[in-house]
Image (cartoon, rainbow, N blue to C red; front, side):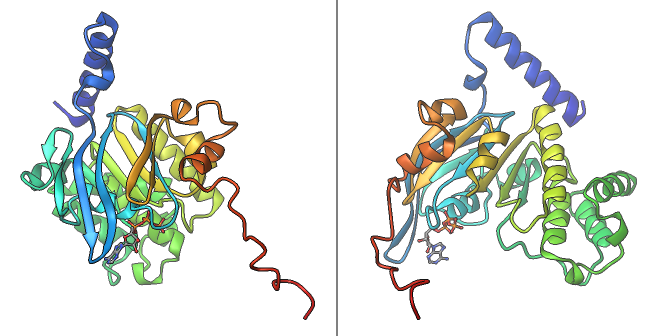
Length: 282
Ligand SMILES: Nc1ncnc2c1ncn2[C@@H]1O[C@H](COP(=O)(O)OP(=O)(O)OP(=O)(O)O)[C@@H](O)[C@H]1O
């Protein structure tokens, strides 16, 4: 059975089970299950014993102020950074005991992505396809479609070293999507991307989650998270302050941004007049 057919069947089963009232769709195997996750760098606690369940088939936003621990958390969830303590499961597989199973099911666009600079965009995708064990013709066909949809067809023979920031993000996204992963993790996917490309990426990701896949992405842009995500986890100082459906986390607040400021304790923070020299008489 193809991955798409498996997803469709899983979605239908979850819907049927939910309809029968036995368990809710959320009770199915979560896309990500984190328990007691800790990471310290010397005296600095980056992630302070978090528990988190992210349901499958959702568009999930991980938000938090600078230094909240988002990148550290995503790195531990995707097997790029070993936790000090705790467990992570992706689609029911333990990331550290069963890394091959997990890596076959996930796509990752990490922060500060390192690419093979001396390959062209097209060659990079061909290489990733081989690493992922895809048949050559499947890689070719998917690469052509991804390059086209992401507006990189005209630059496919250019070396990656000559790509702009946004183009690098897009070829990184194409690399992460090539093997049609079950769960896609993106660290700040829209940073440095122009509005037209951002809209394209958005449409690609919306179509992908509509097929039953899960996207987990970190962002500082609350309007984006509110408009794109149906599930959100708010981090601050290494802890999860709230998580759940966006409307639940927003609660009675006017916007997710307002709820976020309340949750991270930044409501009403001002410069306290300490920058009164700025823009004043010279
Ligand atoms: N390799 C490292 N060595 C030392 N400290 C680190 C390291 N990586 C992260 N930290 C610290 O851990 C904390 C969490 O960092 P992290 O990058 O996970 O935050 P973030 O939420 O992704 O921030 P931002 O939104 O600014 O990218 C910060 O205080 C950071 O300085």
